[in-house]
Image 1 (cartoon, rainbow, N blue to C red):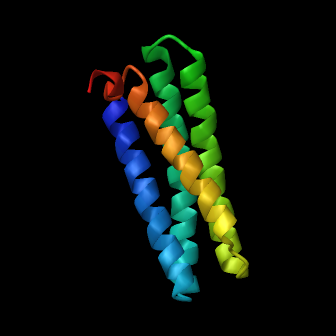
Image 2 (cartoon, rainbow, N blue to C red; image 1 turned 90 degrees about the horizontal axis):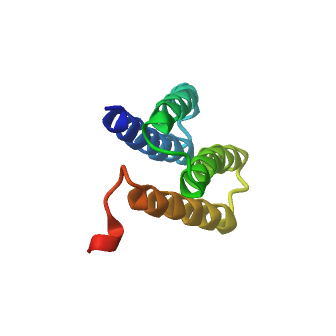
Length: 120
């Protein structure tokens, strides 16, 4: 099943994002740039494994919403990092990123391949 590789790629992408953000914050630009490029490759792994999950279940509005919100999360990861490099990162970027990430996680857990949230 492709669910485990997809979750591993998501987890590694989030950890790389945190690491790259920390390195940019500490002004370690050379290492951060290399890991930022690796982060961009991990975006592709997340997208590819997510696409491989599509045929396992019927296509519904919730699945398409999660696909779109997942792509938006990756876009906001890139926006946050680029604004960190430029030095004009604001709280609005973090708030939007957090809301979209949280929404994506909740929708992903509520889908049939996730944890059944309604049974708790």
